[in-house]
Length: 256
Image (cartoon, rainbow, N blue to C red; front, side, top):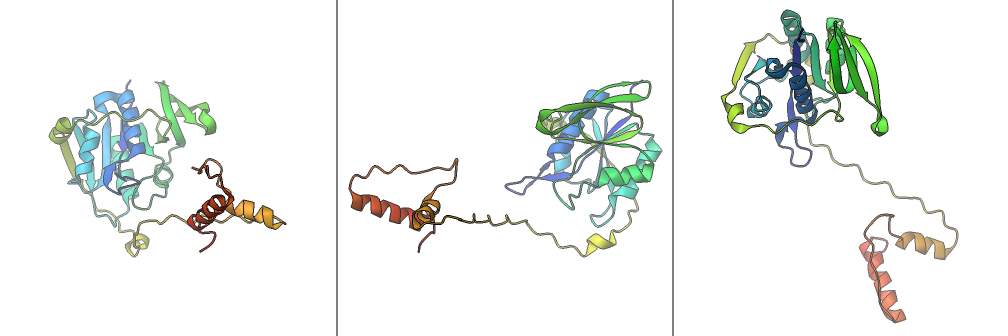
């Protein structure tokens, strides 16, 4: 018997440009769902059904997609749990965390608590499903894998170690049906007053120089980091060498 599989998807965000895109982990979740259920896979999103990025998911070879329509300020967990209970889902595939919004990675766990289902975190693959039990391959550090078994139904968060998502076809994605379902979402009172801003990289911490002699301190100040792009000085005279060292110190902001 083929399991009833649903893949939860979100709006991703490119790490460099910040543009909306198909989320990397959610795309891998859809790829895993296609392996398990084929075209019978259900893809579910909570939010705006007019979002053009959603077409990139159905463009992977799906005829339709379901969108639970609600405002961005509403909590997605109650609407998701009600829908999953009505549809009698066996396996729910999600990403480890979203690329936009709160990006807390708590949705799988909050859903599992509300539904009373087990959670399998960082799934690399679902090897087989037999007699209501699934054999799941977990992703461990340094490329290691661990095989576990879990009874249906369950929620699986798909890791980056899973198979990458196939290329999305533009034409089929535009022709696919977007089935919108109106929901009465509960407003998230905590998130209403939040203000989102681009994260800024933290400044690099300067290394503490513990050299005792002046020569050691000078060497530490002028040394290039290991693996960095150094400079080769081929000046022959002492004056040219001194000038090159002086220019290097100015370039590295050691002296001004």
